[in-house]
Length: 269
Image (cartoon, rainbow, N blue to C red):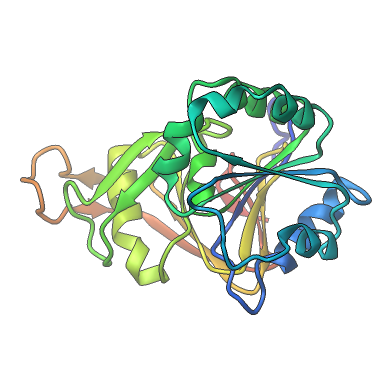
């Protein structure tokens, strides 16, 4: 393989985790992340107060059981909460920021353009890992898949894109549903933005993007990866709302746990 051109070796990990099931809670894949960060990394958990997981009686203890050290949890109620000095200071000393929400827009509209968003981007550039669990995984990207219709057929208007945190412009992430449910909305998103790769992430599975833009799949499921780089044709600009979209010559990869994939050269390693 040719040498990489100028990867940012200092950037922290970007971790997109699928929904956690009650049997696993995503801790198996997070344990791999913690192992890459060093012994007992300090974690800042950020969630909306009305979308926090009420079934977690002691999330901090569960994170520690996966290998975390100190865990500091903050529940955001308004945009002004994203200016809290205690929160921003906690991120300065953290090895991992963990985002959690049940709908991407609920968190992105709360933190977008705030000191918290700027601190997350800066600290990730400096080496801090940033993870999105469940719906929050979509928030990691520059182009966030905010919502979309289920089904395998892409349709005009069947997906809504919105600005995300912008930690990476290489991918568009969808963590919800079975592979067949999310295929149509990922295809529709790529028809609108054929520069990016589409990642569909299974439950209890994480896609870990390193500073060299090599993705590693860990966990019990897999990642569906769509590559539109050789797309020959799309009629997305010409069809009526709700109509199916034509897309030809697009690649699909199924990547189970243990697979590594180079996002720059677009090939499995």
